[in-house]
Length: 301
Image 1 (cartoon, one colour):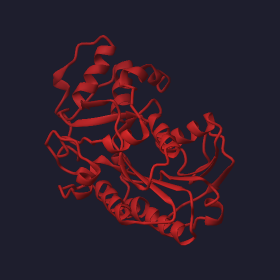
Image 2: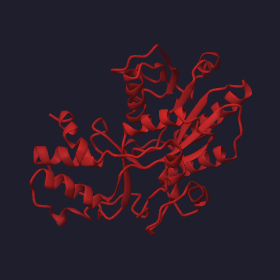
Image 3: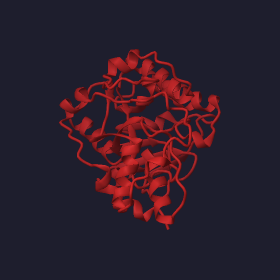
Protein backbone atom coordinates (compact mmCIF):
# COMPACT_ATOMS: atom_id res chain seq x y z
CA UNK A 1 0.00 0.00 0.00
CA UNK A 2 1.24 3.51 -0.83
CA UNK A 3 0.61 6.40 1.52
CA UNK A 4 1.23 10.10 0.95
CA UNK A 5 1.61 12.24 4.06
CA UNK A 6 1.28 15.99 3.62
CA UNK A 7 3.30 17.46 6.48
CA UNK A 8 6.70 16.46 7.83
CA UNK A 9 8.24 16.33 11.30
CA UNK A 10 4.96 17.10 13.05
CA UNK A 11 3.75 15.15 16.06
CA UNK A 12 0.92 13.43 14.18
CA UNK A 13 2.60 13.14 10.78
CA UNK A 14 5.67 11.42 12.23
CA UNK A 15 3.53 9.01 14.22
CA UNK A 16 1.61 7.97 11.10
CA UNK A 17 4.85 7.69 9.13
CA UNK A 18 6.49 5.53 11.81
CA UNK A 19 3.47 3.23 11.82
CA UNK A 20 3.74 2.89 8.04
CA UNK A 21 7.46 2.06 8.33
CA UNK A 22 6.76 -0.63 10.92
CA UNK A 23 4.04 -2.17 8.76
CA UNK A 24 5.97 -2.03 5.47
CA UNK A 25 3.78 0.53 3.75
CA UNK A 26 5.51 2.69 1.16
CA UNK A 27 5.26 6.36 2.00
CA UNK A 28 5.86 9.67 0.27
CA UNK A 29 6.16 12.81 2.36
CA UNK A 30 5.55 16.43 1.47
CA UNK A 31 6.62 19.31 3.67
CA UNK A 32 8.91 22.21 4.47
CA UNK A 33 11.69 20.01 5.82
CA UNK A 34 13.06 16.59 4.99
CA UNK A 35 11.59 14.03 7.42
CA UNK A 36 13.90 13.05 10.28
CA UNK A 37 14.12 9.40 11.34
CA UNK A 38 11.56 8.30 8.76
CA UNK A 39 12.15 5.99 5.82
CA UNK A 40 10.21 7.27 2.84
CA UNK A 41 10.17 6.35 -0.82
CA UNK A 42 10.14 10.00 -1.89
CA UNK A 43 10.33 13.38 -0.18
CA UNK A 44 8.99 16.48 -1.89
CA UNK A 45 9.78 19.92 -0.54
CA UNK A 46 6.47 21.75 -0.30
CA UNK A 47 5.27 25.11 0.98
CA UNK A 48 1.53 25.19 0.38
CA UNK A 49 1.41 28.97 0.59
CA UNK A 50 3.89 29.26 -2.28
CA UNK A 51 4.04 25.98 -4.25
CA UNK A 52 1.62 23.88 -6.27
CA UNK A 53 1.31 20.17 -5.59
CA UNK A 54 2.22 17.72 -8.34
CA UNK A 55 -1.10 15.88 -8.46
CA UNK A 56 0.11 13.44 -11.14
CA UNK A 57 2.38 11.92 -8.47
CA UNK A 58 0.04 12.42 -5.52
CA UNK A 59 -2.87 10.43 -6.96
CA UNK A 60 -0.72 7.31 -7.34
CA UNK A 61 -1.10 6.80 -3.58
CA UNK A 62 -3.86 4.68 -2.05
CA UNK A 63 -4.21 7.02 0.93
CA UNK A 64 -3.41 10.73 1.20
CA UNK A 65 -3.21 12.15 4.73
CA UNK A 66 -3.33 15.90 5.29
CA UNK A 67 -1.57 16.75 8.57
CA UNK A 68 -0.43 20.28 7.72
CA UNK A 69 -1.89 22.99 9.91
CA UNK A 70 -1.36 26.07 12.03
CA UNK A 71 -2.71 27.61 15.19
CA UNK A 72 -2.84 24.64 17.55
CA UNK A 73 0.30 25.71 19.43
CA UNK A 74 -0.47 29.15 20.84
CA UNK A 75 3.19 29.73 21.72
CA UNK A 76 4.07 29.96 18.00
CA UNK A 77 1.90 33.09 17.55
CA UNK A 78 1.06 32.23 13.93
CA UNK A 79 -0.87 34.88 12.03
CA UNK A 80 -4.53 34.39 11.18
CA UNK A 81 -3.83 34.36 7.43
CA UNK A 82 -1.52 31.37 7.76
CA UNK A 83 -4.04 29.58 10.00
CA UNK A 84 -6.87 29.94 7.47
CA UNK A 85 -4.63 29.24 4.48
CA UNK A 86 -3.34 25.94 5.90
CA UNK A 87 -6.38 24.79 7.90
CA UNK A 88 -9.11 25.71 5.42
CA UNK A 89 -8.07 26.98 2.00
CA UNK A 90 -5.40 24.37 1.24
CA UNK A 91 -7.39 21.22 2.16
CA UNK A 92 -10.47 22.59 0.37
CA UNK A 93 -8.44 23.28 -2.77
CA UNK A 94 -6.81 19.83 -2.61
CA UNK A 95 -10.22 18.17 -2.16
CA UNK A 96 -11.64 19.95 -5.20
CA UNK A 97 -8.54 19.23 -7.29
CA UNK A 98 -8.64 15.52 -6.40
CA UNK A 99 -12.29 15.48 -7.42
CA UNK A 100 -11.50 17.26 -10.68
CA UNK A 101 -8.88 14.68 -11.68
CA UNK A 102 -11.06 11.76 -10.53
CA UNK A 103 -8.86 10.43 -7.71
CA UNK A 104 -10.07 7.00 -6.52
CA UNK A 105 -8.24 6.56 -3.22
CA UNK A 106 -8.77 7.91 0.32
CA UNK A 107 -8.15 11.51 1.40
CA UNK A 108 -7.91 12.09 5.16
CA UNK A 109 -8.25 15.39 6.99
CA UNK A 110 -8.56 16.22 10.68
CA UNK A 111 -10.83 18.39 12.78
CA UNK A 112 -10.75 19.16 16.49
CA UNK A 113 -13.13 19.05 19.42
CA UNK A 114 -12.20 22.70 19.97
CA UNK A 115 -14.83 23.30 17.28
CA UNK A 116 -17.40 22.79 20.06
CA UNK A 117 -16.46 26.22 21.39
CA UNK A 118 -17.33 27.47 24.84
CA UNK A 119 -19.17 24.80 26.80
CA UNK A 120 -19.69 23.93 30.45
CA UNK A 121 -22.19 21.08 30.07
CA UNK A 122 -21.09 17.53 30.85
CA UNK A 123 -22.15 15.95 27.57
CA UNK A 124 -20.55 14.12 24.66
CA UNK A 125 -20.99 15.73 21.28
CA UNK A 126 -21.91 13.57 18.30
CA UNK A 127 -20.62 14.53 14.87
CA UNK A 128 -23.92 16.27 14.03
CA UNK A 129 -23.93 18.19 17.32
CA UNK A 130 -20.38 19.38 16.69
CA UNK A 131 -21.26 20.55 13.17
CA UNK A 132 -24.24 22.51 14.51
CA UNK A 133 -22.34 24.18 17.35
CA UNK A 134 -22.41 27.98 17.29
CA UNK A 135 -20.94 28.44 20.77
CA UNK A 136 -18.56 31.41 20.97
CA UNK A 137 -14.88 30.90 20.37
CA UNK A 138 -12.15 33.52 20.09
CA UNK A 139 -9.67 31.08 18.58
CA UNK A 140 -8.83 31.35 14.88
CA UNK A 141 -7.78 27.69 15.10
CA UNK A 142 -11.24 26.60 16.30
CA UNK A 143 -13.03 28.73 13.71
CA UNK A 144 -10.82 27.45 10.88
CA UNK A 145 -11.49 23.85 11.86
CA UNK A 146 -15.22 24.56 11.98
CA UNK A 147 -15.07 25.91 8.44
CA UNK A 148 -13.26 22.83 7.14
CA UNK A 149 -15.65 20.43 8.88
CA UNK A 150 -18.67 22.22 7.43
CA UNK A 151 -17.17 22.09 3.95
CA UNK A 152 -16.52 18.37 4.16
CA UNK A 153 -20.00 17.68 5.52
CA UNK A 154 -21.39 18.98 2.20
CA UNK A 155 -18.68 17.71 -0.14
CA UNK A 156 -19.17 14.79 -2.53
CA UNK A 157 -16.34 13.34 -4.56
CA UNK A 158 -15.06 10.42 -6.59
CA UNK A 159 -12.79 9.43 -3.70
CA UNK A 160 -13.37 8.42 -0.10
CA UNK A 161 -12.95 11.30 2.35
CA UNK A 162 -12.55 10.68 6.09
CA UNK A 163 -12.52 13.70 8.35
CA UNK A 164 -11.52 12.63 11.84
CA UNK A 165 -12.38 14.93 14.76
CA UNK A 166 -9.58 14.61 17.30
CA UNK A 167 -9.53 15.13 21.06
CA UNK A 168 -6.27 15.98 22.84
CA UNK A 169 -3.49 13.71 21.60
CA UNK A 170 -0.45 12.95 23.70
CA UNK A 171 2.72 10.89 23.51
CA UNK A 172 6.38 10.86 24.41
CA UNK A 173 7.37 12.87 21.32
CA UNK A 174 4.99 15.76 21.89
CA UNK A 175 6.30 19.31 22.28
CA UNK A 176 7.93 19.89 25.69
CA UNK A 177 5.67 22.85 26.57
CA UNK A 178 2.55 20.67 26.55
CA UNK A 179 0.96 19.61 29.81
CA UNK A 180 2.38 16.12 30.40
CA UNK A 181 6.02 16.70 29.37
CA UNK A 182 5.97 20.17 30.97
CA UNK A 183 4.94 18.68 34.32
CA UNK A 184 7.31 15.71 34.13
CA UNK A 185 10.26 17.88 33.16
CA UNK A 186 9.59 20.36 35.97
CA UNK A 187 9.40 17.62 38.59
CA UNK A 188 12.53 15.90 37.27
CA UNK A 189 14.51 19.13 37.39
CA UNK A 190 12.89 20.87 40.38
CA UNK A 191 11.51 23.70 38.24
CA UNK A 192 8.56 25.95 39.17
CA UNK A 193 5.11 24.98 37.90
CA UNK A 194 2.15 27.23 37.04
CA UNK A 195 -1.30 26.13 35.92
CA UNK A 196 -4.74 27.51 35.19
CA UNK A 197 -7.61 26.54 37.48
CA UNK A 198 -7.13 23.01 36.17
CA UNK A 199 -10.86 22.31 35.96
CA UNK A 200 -11.07 22.00 32.18
CA UNK A 201 -12.39 18.56 31.18
CA UNK A 202 -10.64 16.98 28.21
CA UNK A 203 -10.50 13.63 26.44
CA UNK A 204 -7.08 12.13 25.82
CA UNK A 205 -5.87 9.63 23.25
CA UNK A 206 -2.37 8.24 22.83
CA UNK A 207 -1.10 9.41 19.45
CA UNK A 208 -0.07 5.91 18.33
CA UNK A 209 -3.73 4.90 18.28
CA UNK A 210 -4.49 7.34 15.46
CA UNK A 211 -2.73 5.35 12.67
CA UNK A 212 -4.32 2.16 14.02
CA UNK A 213 -7.73 3.76 13.59
CA UNK A 214 -6.84 4.94 10.08
CA UNK A 215 -5.85 1.49 8.88
CA UNK A 216 -8.75 -0.23 10.61
CA UNK A 217 -11.00 2.21 8.75
CA UNK A 218 -9.33 1.16 5.50
CA UNK A 219 -9.75 -2.52 6.36
CA UNK A 220 -13.46 -2.07 7.08
CA UNK A 221 -13.97 0.06 3.94
CA UNK A 222 -15.33 2.99 5.94
CA UNK A 223 -17.49 5.25 3.80
CA UNK A 224 -16.87 8.98 3.45
CA UNK A 225 -17.89 11.05 6.42
CA UNK A 226 -17.00 12.92 9.58
CA UNK A 227 -16.01 10.70 12.49
CA UNK A 228 -15.20 11.46 16.11
CA UNK A 229 -12.21 9.82 17.81
CA UNK A 230 -11.48 9.44 21.53
CA UNK A 231 -9.17 7.50 23.83
CA UNK A 232 -9.74 5.78 27.15
CA UNK A 233 -9.52 8.73 29.53
CA UNK A 234 -11.58 11.83 30.23
CA UNK A 235 -9.78 13.94 32.82
CA UNK A 236 -9.40 17.45 34.12
CA UNK A 237 -6.02 19.14 33.83
CA UNK A 238 -5.77 18.97 37.60
CA UNK A 239 -6.36 15.20 37.57
CA UNK A 240 -3.56 14.65 35.06
CA UNK A 241 -1.12 16.70 37.10
CA UNK A 242 -2.14 14.78 40.21
CA UNK A 243 -1.48 11.45 38.45
CA UNK A 244 2.06 12.62 37.60
CA UNK A 245 2.76 13.93 41.12
CA UNK A 246 1.66 10.63 42.65
CA UNK A 247 3.84 8.74 40.16
CA UNK A 248 6.78 10.76 41.50
CA UNK A 249 5.70 9.92 45.05
CA UNK A 250 5.05 13.60 45.78
CA UNK A 251 2.25 15.31 47.66
CA UNK A 252 -0.19 17.02 45.32
CA UNK A 253 -0.16 20.82 45.89
CA UNK A 254 -3.51 22.48 45.15
CA UNK A 255 -1.93 25.94 45.37
CA UNK A 256 -0.22 25.49 41.98
CA UNK A 257 -3.51 26.07 40.19
CA UNK A 258 -5.11 29.35 39.16
CA UNK A 259 -1.80 31.16 38.58
CA UNK A 260 -2.05 31.51 34.80
CA UNK A 261 -4.70 32.22 32.18
CA UNK A 262 -5.37 30.50 28.85
CA UNK A 263 -7.56 31.39 25.91
CA UNK A 264 -9.47 28.09 26.12
CA UNK A 265 -10.72 28.44 29.71
CA UNK A 266 -14.26 29.12 28.43
CA UNK A 267 -14.12 25.70 26.81
CA UNK A 268 -14.66 24.11 30.20
CA UNK A 269 -15.88 20.72 28.99
CA UNK A 270 -14.95 19.18 25.62
CA UNK A 271 -16.07 15.61 24.96
CA UNK A 272 -16.84 13.58 21.84
CA UNK A 273 -19.25 10.71 21.31
CA UNK A 274 -17.44 8.03 19.27
CA UNK A 275 -20.10 5.36 19.00
CA UNK A 276 -20.53 5.99 15.25
CA UNK A 277 -16.93 5.15 14.26
CA UNK A 278 -15.89 2.58 16.84
CA UNK A 279 -18.95 0.40 16.28
CA UNK A 280 -18.06 0.15 12.59
CA UNK A 281 -14.33 -0.55 12.85
CA UNK A 282 -14.57 -2.48 16.12
CA UNK A 283 -12.00 -0.35 17.85
CA UNK A 284 -11.61 -0.24 21.61
CA UNK A 285 -8.91 2.17 22.80
CA UNK A 286 -6.90 0.69 25.65
CA UNK A 287 -3.85 2.87 26.36
CA UNK A 288 -3.82 5.18 29.39
CA UNK A 289 -1.40 7.94 30.31
CA UNK A 290 0.27 5.84 33.01
CA UNK A 291 0.83 3.04 30.48
CA UNK A 292 3.24 5.25 28.53
CA UNK A 293 4.50 7.49 31.32
CA UNK A 294 7.94 5.83 31.39
CA UNK A 295 8.44 6.57 27.68
CA UNK A 296 8.61 10.29 28.47
CA UNK A 297 11.85 9.63 30.35
CA UNK A 298 13.80 9.67 27.09
CA UNK A 299 12.47 13.14 26.26
CA UNK A 300 14.46 15.00 28.92
CA UNK A 301 18.02 15.06 30.10
